[in-house]
Length: 131
Image 1 (cartoon, helix red, strand yellow):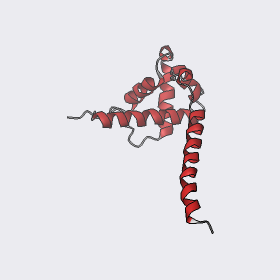
Image 2 (tube, rainbow, N blue to C red; image 1 turned 135 degrees about the vertical axis):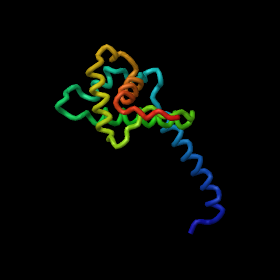
Image 3 (cartoon, rainbow, N blue to C red; image 1 turned 90 degrees about the vertical axis):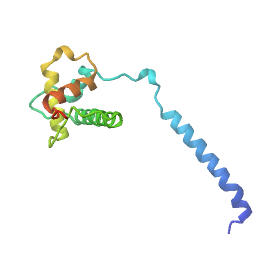
Image 4 (tube, rainbow, N blue to C red; image 1 turned 120 degrees about the horizontal axis):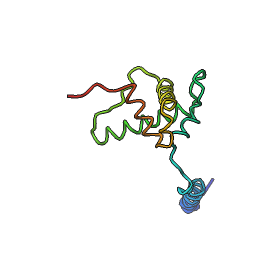
């Protein structure tokens, strides 16, 4: 049986070691921001795949879903009406729409991928104007 006096001194010490271990592991996994680059249209096209005979790759669908979620969160926070309304469209369909847009607009592949994705989705899935 552990004596109460020993337990009283060891528990706070254990907490110190756990906190120190967490801070070391978190700092080791944080990538330097200098190496992080935003995706452009060409990066997104590569992630989506260029063959219209095959479905868009999962990385493409995940990226497009993230862009949609981030835009929706920003618009809720800023209390701005949405301009992309997917309705019953799936994430895969949204990714296919973005991929088709990239194929139709090769001149924009150097542009920011997130804004290109939102532009493509707003053209294909526009929201009804609010009054």
